[in-house]
Length: 153
Length: 150
Length: 104
Image (cartoon, helix red, strand yellow):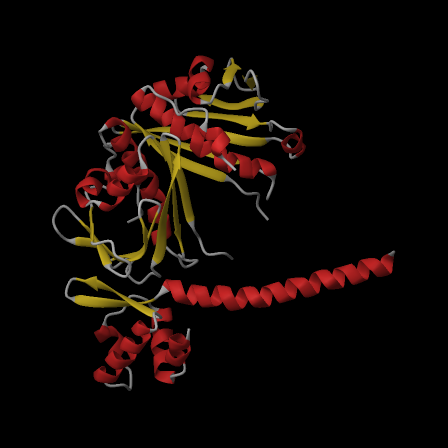
């Protein structure tokens, strides 16, 4: 049985540079990533963290690949008691220019077959990336109520 | 062995009614669905078809029609090869989430490893990105992106 | 690659990897529990495993959580397993070809 992987493709009217910036700058991520500030120096091997609005760290990771503005990859684990024992999965962002658009492909792979976190990220990513697209195209992110994602308790 | 399915979720700042309208009105689809106009009376059992001046388009039968929450229809492929694979099914689930609408598109009953599956896995993200941009900014995606695809 | 094989050559280190495989994301304290090794020895072994990229750590407040590193083990698996699979597939298609020839 193959290990579960999540793939999401979207097209955004923006430039690869702007999209790269939106993916890596905490001031930006805070606006569309449910308030999470991504924090890292984005060097291969460096750590990176997702910081909640109250300053606590929800997820910790490692930067695996940095090729601006084309490819960004990192592994990360969710630090809650529920998920912290799971196998860290690898999230890879590929940014390809398509005329005035950028094709963004997110692949999140390497989850263990019985991963519970997988179900959570499968719900989270479409919301986060939809909000990112809206932010870059309209100037406003989406207001998606977090509770509406219906993560299992 | 169960047949593969393609599921895609996106969130759009619009209302369920506007989204339903965008999915079912040919004037709208022509703008964001790269020139393909849809036509149907959208009653269960009725046919629907897309038309395009230069290309063959999908067509089929309406299976579920519950505006503005759920729409489903069979999907007959556009080329001779995909027609041989038999009809698949597309379901649109429209759910309000605060100020935003969650749209889930499920395309199933597909042949494993078939040409249709590969084609629609590439096509839906383009169409839905274009639909979202169209509803949020008034500007759909340019038709050229279709030709970029391998 | 040498680093990896040397790291795996030690039984204590393999048992640490087994523990992480059974439960990933353990702190140093958790890993030392119930082991015959001293804390110092565990720290030393973990450092070797980390240098060989078999184990990776993520900070959790003041602690470090240890994980089997998903990337290199996957690469090793890919390289060796693909080799075996390719060999098997080739043998199968050759057999099929021979049988089909016989049927003609």
